[in-house]
Image (cartoon, rainbow, N blue to C red; front, side):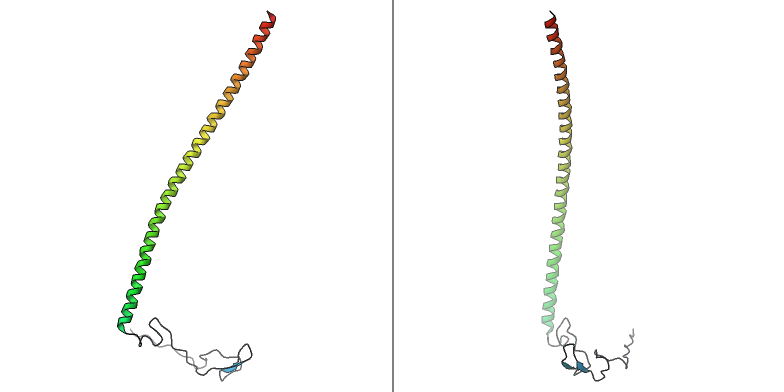
Length: 142
């Protein structure tokens, strides 16, 4: 498929210029004079090097790719291990949370039972005091 080339607008400069500066040189913000030697952008620094990979041999490129693949596999393995560990910790957390909830419920039941037992003991004590008072009254009457 044919891809059309980009249009380069002839009226637009390729490098940033100061206002009213046609030559491409002028003072920078610190007041020094800056001249643009060339209006072409620098060559792109790509994955394979400064000159687009012409200085590297295919073997070194294959070696770099192999190292990157191994590094990727190591990262994937470690991520898998972390996910497994997270799952284990989540399971343990849920078990501990359930155990804590059960213990809290048992504590509340025991506190309620203790409160009921205390109330009953106080009622018995009160009825025994009344009985003792009646008995002392009867002993005084006799």
